[in-house]
Image (tube, rainbow, N blue to C red; front, side):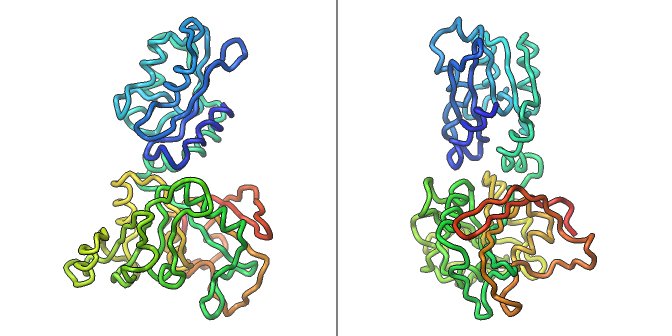
Length: 360
């Protein structure tokens, strides 16, 4: 199963809105075929693993391993459970069940009804984490939200003048590009885009650039800003009050897509933003913005994960804080997180953590 997960990761950035899946066939202790889901609309992992085994008799003596339950419905491709049954594969080991209501145990039930021996839950936690964005999309009806911040050791993301380039070193910034390449969208605010001149593209890592999403209530970002460069698509969210304005009409004339949503807490309605992204099959969003927007996601209970890059520097109390107001009155009302093992990039430390729901 660990090898299935390893294979599945090869599809990162290429298979969304499908999950990352790897599969292999084992006969008498030897791996005889393996494959992974390479691109959305292409053959599934089980299909590729089975195709790698040329001997039908060998298939009938093998065990198929897969990190996610084989599908049981016709989608972009035929059901994998039917293919497993057709090939006479007698045993299947599954990492975790598929949360998609079209599957959700039906693939396993179909296999068992046909006499296939199925074992579930092998490295289940690891398999669930691998596809945490896919699972969040189906269970919560919204994208998986990861906040990315770069701060000093005293928790500042900019100096007293607002300068923030560069808090971290080149190795940490390269890792940010890698994180972008694995997400469906990178989201920022108009304030951050204007202050940093951000392009929000992937330049120092393999893979393509994700959808760029800009929250711009009053359409204040100039249309010639770097975030509108032609090397990646950009989607703008603005307040409904901007519909029909000269700025909105100008955006349309330039081919810039604007979606209008309601406002809440002095900014755009984040639930409305995420609902639209979910409708567009965006599974994962990397939020790269300042403390105000980051705190809005936390206060709303919409933040799932945090990537905090910490540089060995001090800006002092007159620098900009990592998070805006959270309204915490007592320590037990704080937004809680669960740390993952820290990693080091050059002189900087990356703290990776999951938010523990509910938030205050």
